[in-house]
Length: 145
Image 1: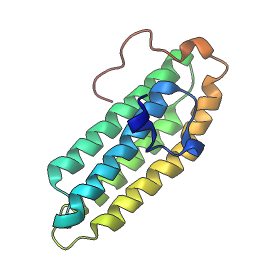
Image 2: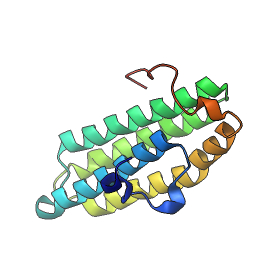
Image 3: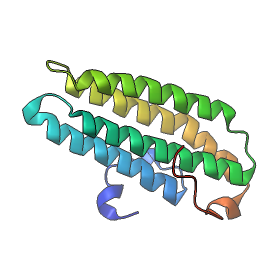
């Protein structure tokens, strides 16, 4: 995880798995870049919203792969990921419209990330702890999650 990316992830949200922490930091960095982009236009370009959702899907696939490698039941976590994707997608779609509260939507998305990491992903890390050799992929995760 490079220092520039790492600075976007609050220390309290580090879960101790380098690849997942790096992806979390990239998600927060993406949000920072979106906020900067939206300063002048007060809307979120649809392609930028799509890019964030794609990054989320890739990240969720990574987490699922870690859980599968460790033999952890990930069904409930997957449902929370799906719910998050649906709600964040809906919020981002609204932010792409004219006269939308773009920054309110981006704060909402950021809150979702923080809450999810602080609860579900911390739990995932705790469940992975008994499987230290599983913190690296034996093969690449699937491209689509």
